[in-house]
Length: 358
Image (cartoon, rainbow, N blue to C red; front, side, top):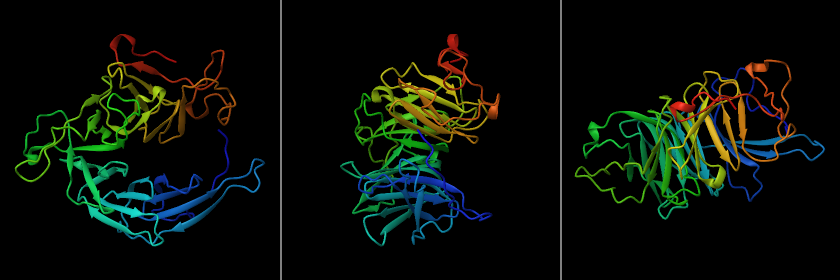
């Protein structure tokens, strides 16, 4: 991993221009085009031109502010892309589906009327759908996509193991902050009908939309669908801020928690054998985002991005160097024979082994 360059997308003291979402979009295999969501509700396409091997010319970007005014100036909380489609979600609950294959960026929008946090788009399913995580009595809902348009009424409501019955008005309020596809090698297969979600109550729940338990209630709304698997760190009651799937044997789930910079891991083949690890620095920050990619997990706290690398062949030159000053930014380097990486505290989800350091 090498540093290629940096660029600024805001002017100094420009209000409400924090970047709040990013997603790469299809560009013919170049992997150089992505969309950004901003605090002021704007969407912007960025085309990246990386430097050559000798660093010349330097990293350059081409920017295009879209003409989509779909979020009325509300903070864009989540953006997600698949194929030629872009799904954007504002904090106030406006969800917009945009077709990127058209010059005019044709879009349609629905209003969830709830404080909204995260979204997920699946166009590969036999019935394409979007999933939304909100703060409400129905924190995780599925909306079908018909004729390239979002259907305003949920086709499925995903909930907890609680015996909720048919009266949705009696459901307690909660929140879902992270949604992911399943691990490719999960016991349920890599079907697009499987979803993994991180909840406010600290649980990671896996759902199968093909479940026969989904039936229509007498009130014309879907009966809540219960999870096929629930996972949690028994030593932590913090909310789950993000989830990602893949990793070793393509069978792992990783979750970033709301405090103490903790990331938890589970192998869905052995769901009772989870373990957790603090990010370098062991500060009080949430882990805002996690991405499993091959043998690595990338994450970010309020202080720094970080990576856990479980693969072979890692050396001191695998990642960019940080200053060697003792105690740099609260980090302590390892002192073992390899000298690679930083001390982090890990613990297994068992009382007898908590507190091991690696």
